[in-house]
Length: 411
Image (cartoon, rainbow, N blue to C red; front, side):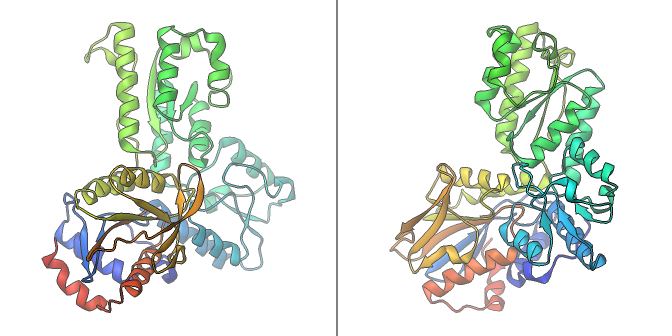
């Protein structure tokens, strides 16, 4: 896989060495057991896969190169480059300006742009309408387009099934930049509707079976269906794709459920199901799959708590938190500064969507066992910073070299 030139401030010598060693030991990526960092009274179990993915590294490289190649020019980001506060703050510090917030609300009007300005398309991609607006101004959006290739893969898959007259069901968060972009690209070719979760899917199934009157569809799915959507005919043939950072098991459950609904409603079997339901296969990105599988492997280890690192508005990171919360106390933080005292942590609650302080989050027993992972948009340097903060709390001084010498014996 291609290697990217990611700024050194996002790298971590410790994490790089650990990842390299694991790659050497497990070239086929079949071992999802964690890596033990044994500091005596502190034992940290690092997930097999975590941190920057291909699409994020690609976006960061293009963004920083764009800044270097365009001195004196106004440079804009359509919205956040990725869902990581440090990376976005660094870009802002270099003079880059955001045109929209993460929900698509305009911060700087497009009318203020000129053809001489540079606009970077973020890793999530953008809608066809926004792309046209920028192109009409004379801005060459293709030159600085950092759309993740795995997002584009979803768009291509949507177009393929659209050509076979299937309606596209997008499993995603309706307000997320990627889902908005995917919805735009899919609906340009075929009727499209978004389902956020299984609750939405159950509701949609009632329109497939005719249990619900079509007159209530526009209210039930307000803002989540394409123009001129005809409930009576557009749900007769469907296919499911997803926002690439959704929980894999959720997408699979939704797809399996809708497939069964179509089989029952139209009296089909496995040989005839394609008459009504497209075989879309999995459109989740490899990193989302790997990171989620690694968390399942991580959770097989007995531990006292879990720490998940990443941006609070990061979809893929939030799903890692959800997985960990099922088994043990989980603290979602975006930097080492969130460990604000020796045994106090300021962390994000994904349910209340706010930060809260938890005292005595570290167990009194020794050793304290901590599971740790991070999202696909989180720099490894942040993870190492948190490890170092914990080392200071426990007053351990094992060096990176000493630690790495023990890794072969901890797998």
